[in-house]
Length: 84
Image (cartoon, rainbow, N blue to C red):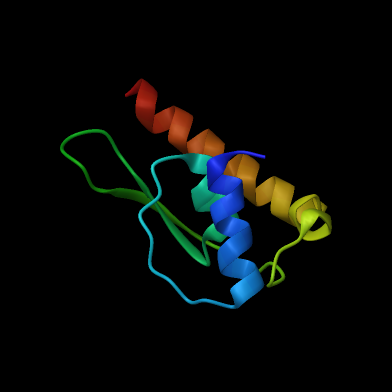
C-alpha cells in the first residue's frame, strides 16, 4: 500500500473529517467527497467530481464499479488537462 493509501486508511478508521490538498490522484480519489480537478497554468477548476459513493471506504467499496468508473473519469480529465 502506498503512503497515500495508508493516510486514507487512518482518516477513515478514525472517522476524521479533513480538508486536504493531496499531491496525487490516488489520494484525491480515495479521500474526496468533492474533487476539484485543476487545469495547467493559469490554474482554474476544469471539473468538480462529486462522489456519491459509500463511506467509510474499504477494499470492497474501492473496487465497486461506480467508484472505479468515477476514478477513471477523474484520470481522464487529469490526462486531458495535462496534455493542453
